[in-house]
Amino acid sequence: MKVYLLTLVLLYPLLVFSQNNNAPSSYDIHDIKITGYLQTQFQQAQTQGISSFSGGDFAENSDNRFIIRRGRLKIDRVDKYSSIVFQIDATQNGLQLMDAFIQLHQPDYKQVKFTAGLFNRPFGYSIIYSSGYRDFPERARMFQTLMPRERDIGGMVTYQPTRAFHFLTADLAVVNGSGLFARDYDSKKDLVGNLTFKFDSLAGKKFHIGFGGSFYKGSVRNDTQSYYTSSATGFTKHTDPAYEGDNFKRNYFGGNVQLQYDSPFGVTTLKSEYVAGTQPGVASSSSVRGSVASTSFSTQPATDLYLRSFEGYYVWFTQQILKTRFNALLAYDVYDPNSKLSENQIGPDNLSTAGDIKFSTLGYGFTYMFNNRVKFTFYNEHVTNAPTALENYQKDIRDDVFTARLQYRW
Image 1 (cartoon, rainbow, N blue to C red):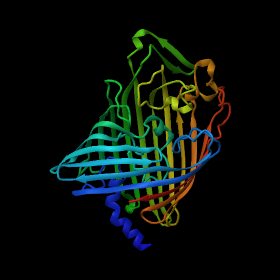
Image 2: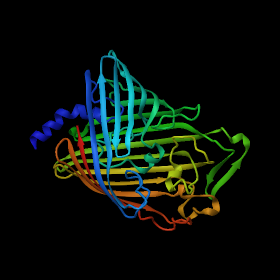
Image 3: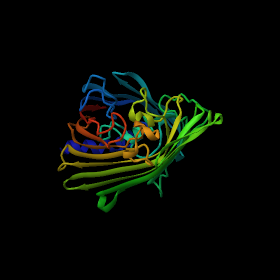
Image 4: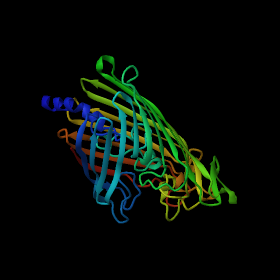
């Protein structure tokens, strides 16, 4: 155990950088380094063919599966004035580019970095936190809806003082707004800002706290002559030839906090984020399944836009068990794509659809660190939705998912 703990202490400076997706493995000058991780898992769903935020939808006739959830290979290099990061994801679905960015910095003024390329949008806490280090299998439903696959292409300025205000980090990015696939479909650009504070080693080096706030100011182009706005009674349709080509607001505001306490019983952590704002979506239909109706677009939406006020949050709790390699996990997250409309009001009479239904997820399980590279995760998600007047959504859907994952990180 002493050797294991010593290894973690020696690797800690490397881990700090690795946990941030928008950084190389280390800012120490080095030639090419190759790092990465592989996550292979078995999943069991309550029902065949369910829509799921636990690694994607299940096939129509399947309620269980083996999948490669993530297969990341990251290459980075750092010299005196710049660094480069290139990361791919290899799974059963094929090969996909995940990160490709260049960072510029001045050795005599290390507080400022400029990043250009494909990188994680700097919003909140969990978006830029690496999935290879996160205790919980997936990010919360709200982030998978608002920022699918987390990345976008553009430019970013980061400011992090090195002395008096070393606890502060500020990011400001300009991005296409079309996400990972990075094919912009209009002339507008989106603005993303993040301000974080982190205080370590308080209360005799036992208590650690971090918190911050974020904003996303963007838009979505309307490709039709109509759009819908939500209210407490449903949706109202607006039609005018002038609406074709208009850009409607896509604005988010969020806050987050992270607490950690090191006790004789083990490390205890509590992390939470809250996000609210305006999300342009579409109506659920035969070709747009349920909650996908409120997902951010990677291509130009072909149908009328539905403008929804949303809110969502998550709470993650982890407890190391008696300073062993076991960690108990407990999570709760909620995403309400239409906060103006209650579930008992959702139905065909007021133009609402399955894209307006609120979902909550209670997750629980544990992880076991076999060593500093190999981790086992066993996790169950109990997903609930309130009954509505919509067909197929008049009672809670049976869409719980159990995940058993094996991860190797190098």
